Image (cartoon, rainbow, N blue to C red):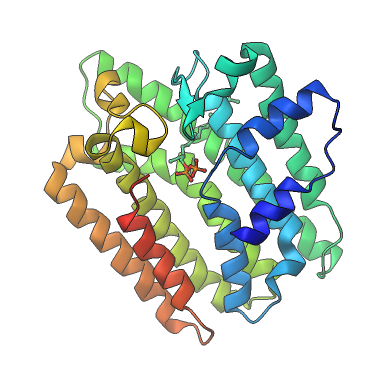
Length: 285
Ligand code: GRG
């Protein structure tokens, strides 16, 4: 986490450039850095030197931050606060916020292309996976499905648990999965190791979203750093809304258990990844 923070802070931004101020405002605004931390932890579990893949891991945070900036825009979730301060478009205006998101996304691919201690073929495979996870196959597609689901719900139609899960597998899960796989692939994992870590990441991704839905109900805006209760206000489909709060918590516990079980086939030090799963279940923001 500290390595990620320090790396992001030292990126060679053009100090006088207006756009950099706007991009850095959101990037350095206090995120939990879960995606890069997952990538580094997956590599370390496989015995690799995590710091060797820091540029690629940090790139995940740039992609994630871009998605948050765009998610807060009036045409999307229309939220005024993020990470405890004004959303990017509230600070710099919508035009700059759109550009800051696009700037972070493209900068991420510069970082992903930095020299890494793997073959060019392996690096290309990783870049292709991250691009797909961030794109219409993954996050963008999931966000689009989420918008469609909102219309469906506003028309009084229901959303099934399977439909909700499919949205989140793409919207939130794909980038989390890509983060773990990036670490596993750049860490020199075997097919078997990559597959075990992918199973861990799929359960973790689902758990992450269930917890996100629960936090929206249970925590206050100050703790969350963004408006609490916004899912309810928007009438969005969430795990607590579909299953009930106690059942959503049980479902969350089950996903954490399965994530941790997926680690049992690995030989390396899995304690950190297991603890990270517990943290995701217990986090307050
Ligand atoms: C191109 C208009 C346009 C949109 C891009 C906005 C978007 C596509 C996708 C949205 C994806 C999204 C925001 C998913 C939410 C995922 C989620 C639960 C975010 C919270 O992540 P944390 O808790 O946040 O890791 P921090 O602040 O800690 O980094």
